[in-house]
Amino acid sequence: MDIKDILKLCDHTLLRVDCTSDEIKKLCDQAVRYECASVCIPPCHVAGAKRYVGDKLKICTVIGFPNGYMTTAAKAFEASDAVKNGADEIDMVINLSMVKDGCWSDVAADIKAVRAACAGKVLKVIIECCLLTEEEKIRLCAIVAECGADFIKTSTGFSKGGATRADVELMRRYSPEYVQVKAAGGISSIEDAEDFIALGATRLGTSRIVKLAIELEKQGLSEN
Image (cartoon, rainbow, N blue to C red):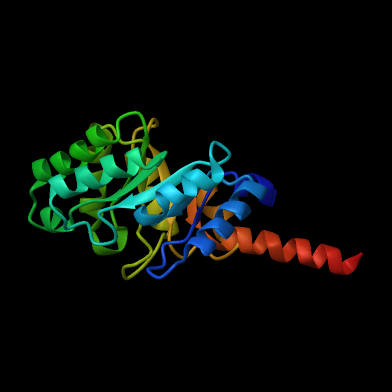
């Protein structure tokens, strides 16, 4: 698979807690240059990034990140604020405490509140697969779909593990066709990206693929 085609599926990501506005601008410049799907950045940088790129690039941000245990009202406000600041896409973290308590209607209400707060924008729901049983993952595939999300996402990248091939395969198998799958966390090579795409992921949360593209360009220049 051509790396240019992979890049078009990447949310070029920088969620480090101490990232600076200059780093965010650099991330945006790279994403525009390599035609990434979006940049995924902290909420505090959304307004500045939107002013910087205008309509040249989609801005994605995270809600209830990375733990997901904020109140539903707090998540809904955070999502609404992000949209007002210019976010085009929202990646929210589910409430894992509710999942472990088996409070499935509350899990759904949490997602629906964020869905309503970002109406008209792309919503991706992070279920943090590394903390779930297989039965919980399957149940959440159905709930995420019922709540009107556009994507179900494997991981925050801030917990015990990132995307796995088994999880992407499971999510694609148990999610309806209209819900897309995003793999995130630990995508460190072209092979990883190709495998996840082959298994059904249509979006990748990573910064490594752009770095690999830059490295390949440098190698090409050095050979001429």
